[in-house]
Image 1 (tube, one colour):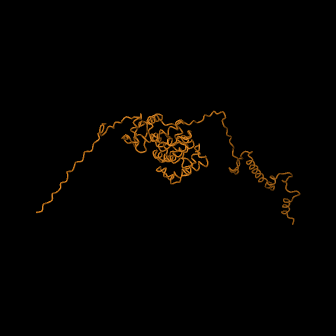
Image 2: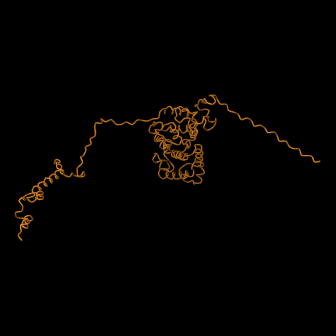
Image 3: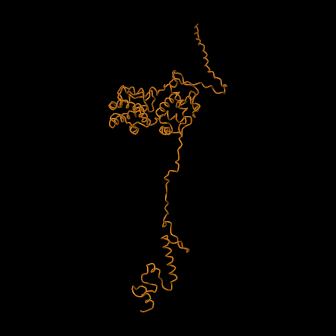
Length: 385
């Protein structure tokens, strides 16, 4: 079959011979793909233009054509990198944080010092620094300081001091604590708060001290808080009393309460540890050791947990919490809350505010004696006739 149709097809698919007029030696693959029959030259030329435009867009070397060609997706485009430069000359000023401190705190502190000048609070005579044996070796004294601090948690100083006296008479050393059974140790420290738990803590702490520290106590806060039953407050106080090193403020319930009442914190706190961190932000370091002794005794005598005695406090006009829950009456003479007769701290009596009694002193009414009832009369028995 020699039809013109098959002859034309062979001219296209053959590898050698004369093919198409548009086929030239050395042409690129692109030109081969774009070659069409001669009658479609106009269509093939437009397709070649579109292909070149697509290649120009990908390479980024050609300008955007005027024809409505489909745009490439945003993922195929390269993002432009920004160069960040830093000023090396330090011309930019740094932001300075303002040092916050409570107003009139120095005046309040001096007033507390004046009220505590008598040194007649329970902490002055029965605190942790008074419960150790002064004649004992150094490592034994440090251990006794730690034991007194562990017993003082949730316990009044009077009870802690009595328990330490019994322990010292028994032998308050690491070896003796480990050799004492739990029942005997509980009888020695009773009635301190949570005495059963403290018996367990004393045994565990003594065993840890003997094994890791040779019978002595750690000389760092990190080492002290690892001991069973020892918290941050005890650790800082032990560093101050036993090692004579100020590592932080010992914040107990008194320091926590009074600091919030005086407004010594940037914002109110809920736990003693929060109070410690807030106080250490602004209070000078040279006052960290003194502040615990001052506020604890002040809280035991004047700024009581319930019904504080604001009427006898020198800070009653500078304290934001004054006279909110305090009674007007003074403590009785001779009570633990009253000042000793030798104390130089004296306060003036406040006149009663004008009101129902016109500012005059209200006279205390004495109870009238109850009327005596007449003696019952005995009836005479009737005589029998």
